[in-house]
Image (cartoon, rainbow, N blue to C red; front, side):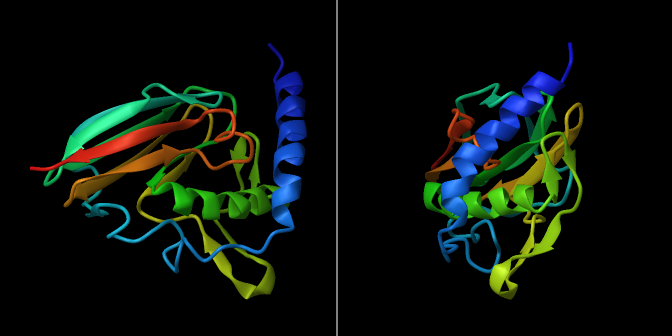
Length: 183
């Protein structure tokens, strides 16, 4: 099966969804960390490869789960497997942080840092000199056929969102709920 019809459809969707957003100023909700802070993210990064494994498969604009539940005090090793034909993001943060991040992701695609099926670079300078590093510990971009991992220690209860912020993906339903219950 040829990738060309799928890539053309994704490019068109990207243009339609991203174009209106690119003219807006970038919100400051994400903060200097780019993808939230420890308070917003209900914990902090853990040593790579540590924790109970939670495996999530990503396909075209869908996660294999709609809800992940963990307990405060628990360390989780998220294993994000991309079974699709396009790059996908596995990122967890409050909805407002994701909303602030989506225009940056659209800009990264517009400038060729990410293509529909390949990650070219994880760093770019945004208009106005703001540097965008897609290296925050609570997010990973995963190319088709590859796997990404995040190890995280959850320290407090709350509910945040798992999302793919690439243009058109979230809008097509690529989101899930991450619920951290009290100890």
